[in-house]
Amino acid sequence: MPLRPLPVLVLPHHDGSPLYVSTPEPAIGDVVTVRLRIPLAFGAVALVRTRSNPDQEPRFDDARLLGSAATGDDGYAWWAADLVVENPVHGYRFLISMADGGHWWLNASGLHDIETLDSEDFKLVAHPAPPAWAATSVMYQIFPDRFGRSAAADTREAPDWAMPAQWGDAVDQLPPGRSHQFYGGDLDGITEHLDHLERLGVTLLYLTPVFPGRSNHRYDAAAFTEVDPLLGGDKALIRLVEAAHARGFRVIGDLTANHSGDGHEWFQAAHGAPAAPESAFYYWLDAEQRDYMSWLGVPELPKFNWTSPELRRRFIEGADSVVAKWLEPPFNLDGWRIDVANMTGRLGDEDLNAEVRQAIRQTMIDVNPDTILLGEFTNDAAADFQGDAWHGAMTYANFTKPLWSWLCRPDPVPSFFGVPLGSIPAHTGVQFHRAHTRFAAGFPWRTRLATMNALDTHDTARFRTHADAEAVPVAVGLSVTLPGIPVVFAGDEFGLAGIDGEHSRTPMPWSSVTDPDVAATIDLYTALIGLRRRMRR
Image (tube, rainbow, N blue to C red; front, side, top):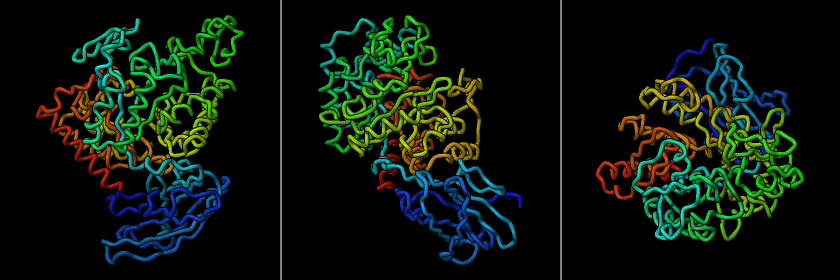
């Protein structure tokens, strides 16, 4: 029976929300009731079964008809089945047998007229659950050098690597300014503008790295044991987190688990010194330890070797690790976003990614289980995001790329999120839905709820650069209503533009906040974020 085109409203539906699943946090051995809604207009249904796959052996269970909500073509029937959770990730799908002899499969990617992939099953996850607040969060991403500059910043001497700039200067798009232009934003500057964020309605602040480095982005960490003095040091972070918590915000930091900077104390101890204990922390290409593996060949970013037990002890395992230190008092961060999570622990025939992410999460659970762990992943992320560690993804495949393909102009671009197309694809709304569904289908429902729905980030062009003003309400509306965490990159609400990641890191134009066009955009974001928060209460 070939799949006939039907309106979405007359298709069977199931997802992981409380209406359809009796508990989002089962333990192994628990019985979970799953429910399926089938519109009467879909046709006469003879039988519904669930197909589970415990221990990779398929099992079918009959569902029971709960009854119909109405009669006639406008109504729908509900079916329910009880599943025993037998594995940490328990996949299931529905087999719908029609009265006319036809059969349909329903899984997380939709309705199918042929048997489907296990990887796209609905999933019950028995791993430790994300914090309850994750699914209700609205995230605001801050690039510390460009958000706010306190008076104390004027007393700090610029470092030798920096190219000092005035707050109103244009962003330098060419090296070395791309990474060395220094505006002097600091953490107290963020604290001074919390009123704006509270008015906007955001609930979760994500700070890109605050550790010392030799760049404005600080992804080339020179240490993980202190906050960069240029940002105000440890005490400034404590002040910011305390002030944010007082307003009901949570604050997460940014860790580079894939690499350090070449100025990092560990790398400096090992570079050219094979006898150093830190030698095992990196991948060396010669006996003298002069040449080394780095992130995408960038020499300033030497890659960590996670086969080292000592690196794990210092960085990710236990109460004395870097991961633990900043979640504990007096700092009290509420979680981590892990940079380049997709490449972490992976090189050639080595794949330690699962070990690393699970160690990070276990340390977080031991220190404070009410913390969130997000992983950056630039492409199809489903295989790594099955609930064993990452709570959600900072991924562009599920939302950002499909959104741009639908709502942005087909402008020429040198690269579309890493794909050499030469222009932004021109997709329809139907294609947006298909792409979003395809990439999200492999995630368990609760992972989807903690995955970031970003229009843009510090690593991309600004959405507004390629989208007409009329598209902004639609884009922001989708961000706040689709499953996931809505993300505002600082300045989006001011209507800022930028042609690439570095150019998008524009100092916040605070003096323009009362300009009519800017005020209207801020009001739009405030209204839609308010809608989201009312939905998620």
